[in-house]
Length: 407
Ligand code: CTP
Picture 1 (cartoon, helix red, strand yellow):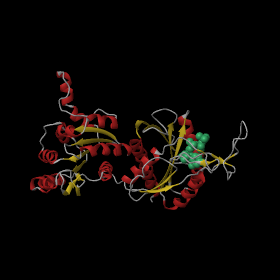
Picture 2: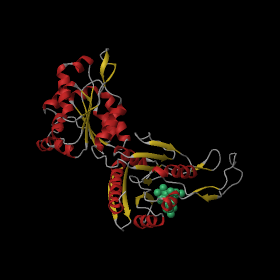
Picture 3: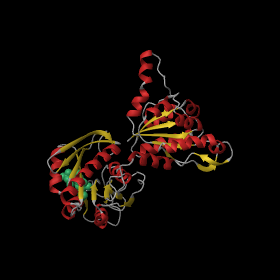
Picture 4: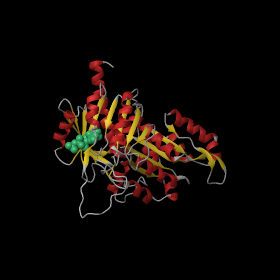
């Protein structure tokens, strides 16, 4: 998801850097726009470093006439290329300009050109917030349908205590994700069971067999499904990611534990997305004590783990079953083979082992293999965007099935 983060000139501007970081963690691409006032409090470089994007600081920043012309229409391009506009902190001045359509800098001009959902997180002195003029502007902005993340009560930079403090960063990030999901609560009524991350199979009490799955793709799917109104259960191997919001998270370590929890949760599920990179083998027997280095070489005796997806394929009933295929070659053939052999309704195949697709990357590029023999290529995008495309396809399968069987 592409988000514009507008930063107004208040002391809370420094907190906007943390907001940028949290949004990136939630699979957003963040375009920062700093007002002149914001630049008095924070440096563009902070945001450029965090977002890896050019930070917009001025309406007419370039020197040549030609460049000025192109930057003069940049606000239109930025408005068109992003899905959500969030302003945090939204100062009294920024809010007043938005309420009355004054377009005298990049952010206020961009606001007029932007047609998507707008999230505003006001922050100012408590007296300013309470002033009739500020409240009248807020009423206009609320009536326009913008989401307001109300400021909190607390200690303010001016030394007083009262309402006016910028809301908690996670509250603002939640509002952005909700705004992006918009009215598309198209997965309401569905219970989506997602597995994510690697599994770890112990070799002895201190070592394990695992893989490089980061869990990012599965977490993005879980979060996107929840934002679209589904009840989501996420069964996850050990990963280094925050729990997605509005999702019931079950943490497991081994393939055996994942197997156990998946079949415990299966009954309630209507859609199963099997994104986890499950280890295929585990130790035949795990010694109680650490294995000592006694020989120059050693071999481990391994047994296969249960193939959870294949078993789901046999027991799925009328649930939709989405498998994943992580491949280093022959993407389409492997996807088609797994679709058939594991009785899935769709297989999402991706190339692993390259830098910007696969396990650890924030972006991905996948091919969806469908039962009618069709392959749908999804070009490189953020994992959040890929998640949303996968869910769009899942919804199509669901609607097609409902049309045939009823539900
Ligand atoms: N999978 C599973 N249980 C296993 C192994 C894999 O549920 N023990 C699931 C994964 O969650 C994924 C799909 O099977 O959805 C494909 O995983 P992948 O590792 O690509 O395929 P494998 O079945 O292991 O086949 P191969 O090793 O031949 O590529």
